[in-house]
Image (tube, rainbow, N blue to C red; front, side):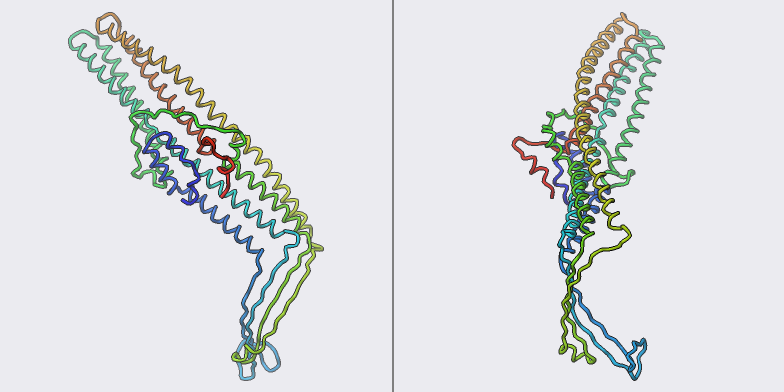
Length: 427
């Protein structure tokens, strides 16, 4: 889609070919992004329409008038009628003495640039939304744990068959297998919902053929991108740029409304020819040139109220711009905090998982040698598997936090030596 090339391909850092393909498709086929692009086209047409007021107009005139002998216009045709043919050109032009037309054009152009930034923000948000639907590693882990629990159950059943285990041990392990199956059902439901979301994001019906392949393992997070200075962040984020451009558009609208109260000078010129016989029309040309001064006297306060309205809109846009700036800073800080805390949590869960795995191995060996009860082994196995799921969840959340970081910094980051002003340049 036109304009998407400005969105930095931040997702390539995750090294996931499936993610790359889905984001590429979504940027071409997503209906929400298409709607944003059509709004951009409409804004471009409005800007061109307003700019046309700076140019003179030229109209062609052609007509035929039928009159009776008394000089009254008639509808029907009769034997006592005269025919008058007329052909000509007329042009008009308003002198933009006070810059009212130019201010109106500026307001439309600023709105066009703001709509362009809206389109960029939609593309960045879409790429992040697609990335958030990609991970099904939790389901793969549940499948692995279910296979482990089934193998343990087979061992317990074999020991029960030769009298080395009691029936309660078999029942407890069967309960764990069923509990793991229940967890798999829940994770499959989550995976199917994510597939539905992904299908809609790439412009397909949710019951379509889109399927997410569970990854063999989660990709390692690359180094944290360069955030840059706060001023660079504000220049880079399309929503901040859009809010600023709309403030500029509102300011130009105020100028146009104020100048609409001043007098206007209109110039008009025409050249025309008329004759009773169409063959003689080119021999009787008449030219006219006129200038007209129009000054508003009484309008019921319409122009003054329009000034008040545009001033209020400018105040609204200023407040929205300030709120957008603060929200941009908050988005970055929230995402960085979330990733930092998740990394701390991952470190703690990894240590707990190592201890749980060691404990389970020790208790299992003791049980196989008859020195421990199976209930201790079962509790240890549940703890270990629960920690594995918590660890994977924390890793998934860290990836989501990294996606949030990229969304917060508008999808990309500054490369060494890159000019932020050039990066933030509007199309």
